[in-house]
Each structure stands twice: as structure tokens, then as C-alpha cells.
Length: 212
Image (cartoon, rainbow, N blue to C red; front, side):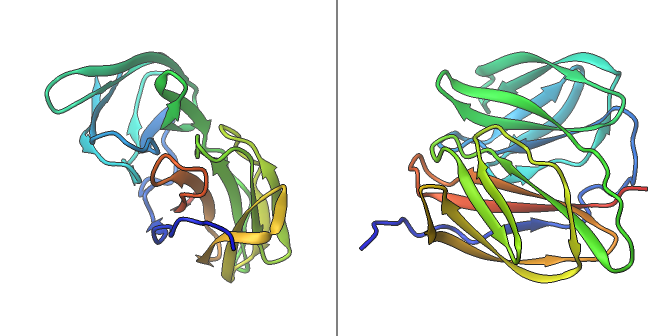
């Protein structure tokens, strides 16, 4: 019998990107577990005052170049200040757990060609405590995705799927099954996060965007 912690249900964030394209657009995702909500600024822009784990902001336009990301608590305590490069495209800044406590990483939100019958999906492993993870989606398999890795987009038929999360060492043992609805002409990022500091405590966060 496998001792697997009961995961939380997945979250969906549809049409987070109300603007289809923003040059140097930035949003922030909090994927760090075991912390209170953060106040987040990027450069001089206040992105959130209480960003909880598993929450994402809308895009805000920045100046291209290095911008300092500041994470602070409700009492003003600064957890982290780190420069992140913002390109001329769109970027998700992810707050993640790290050996030092906290870190941030920039994820380029590139486009993917879709049509009235297809969608695109990629996987981002932000689960610090879990190591490499497999994600199966019908016949599509994202194999052994390491922590901090973001896969390329894959185009699939629009429709309903079940995302099955497993470990590369034991792909037959599904840690988590999550229903996923992929709409046509949309692109998706399936973020993998921990919901407590345990290797099997994995949750998913599906973000839907429009491009073009």
C-alpha cells in the first residue's frame, strides 16, 4: 500500500490574460508553500498586496530590462529581493520554494498556433519538494519534468482530458488524477505545485490564455 497524501483539488484560472498581448507584460504566480500571503512588487509596480499560494495576478506592463521583484509580508518584512529580466514579450514570475527558503523564476509566456479544433498545453514543474514528475494527458506524455523546468507547448485536440501525475520511477502509480477541459483556440499552462512540504503533496493549477 502506498502512503500518498490526499491532494487538494485543482484550480482553474480562465482568461487570466484579458489583454491578448501586452509588450513586456508581467504577472505573478505564488507557487510557494508554507508561507503567508505575499505583498509583491515588480520594479515600481505593486502587483499584489496579499497573494496567496496557488493564486496568480493579471498582467501589468513593465519597462523592458531588469526589474527587482520584492516579496514582503503583511508586517513589511522583506523575504526576498531579486532582479529578474523582463523581455519584450509576456512573462509569468513564479514564486517558488528553494533551499534558501524562497526564490523567483521568470517563465516566458510564448504563443502557440491553435485553430477552431485545437488547443496548446505545456507543463511547468514548480513543486520543489517533489523532484521530476510525469504528466500524462491522453496519448500525450510530458516525461520526467524536473523542478523549475517548463516544457514546450504541444498542440492537442480540444476537449476533456484527465491529467495523470506520476513519478518517473513508478509511472504506473498515479499520484493525482485531475479533469482538464481544453477549449479550442486557447493555450494552457499546467503548473505543478506542492500543497505542503511533502514529496507526494502535489496539486495542479491550470491557466488558460488567449494569444493573437
